[in-house]
Image (cartoon, rainbow, N blue to C red; front, side, top):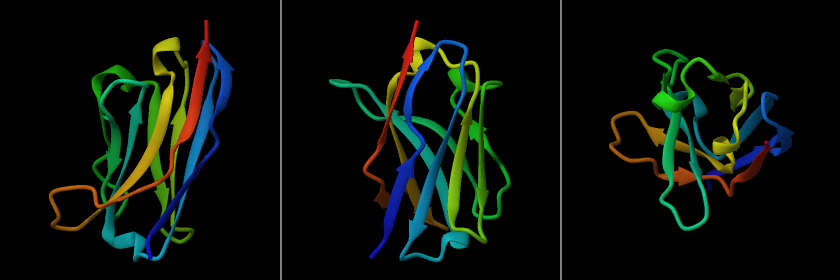
Length: 119
């Protein structure tokens, strides 16, 4: 049974930083593309960043480029999202997700962690 558990969310002032973690179990972590998504109440869940199974090809939505960094430690089966220069519009529930090599959709999701950025 795949489990993804996010942590590291919280309340921070604008301009501050947070580091999210996603601990994975029940899967061969190094065989999965991993991603971060975020969602605000009443809106659809949106893509934030993703990283390939081997740590290559990091990609980001335009609004976080230059501020967020996605990384992974396959030895620890953990995904990270370093978020710097946070803005109030980054406020959301952040989810990590896993997509097997060759798959077209993310099949496993965490429960989410709240990030709130005050102005």
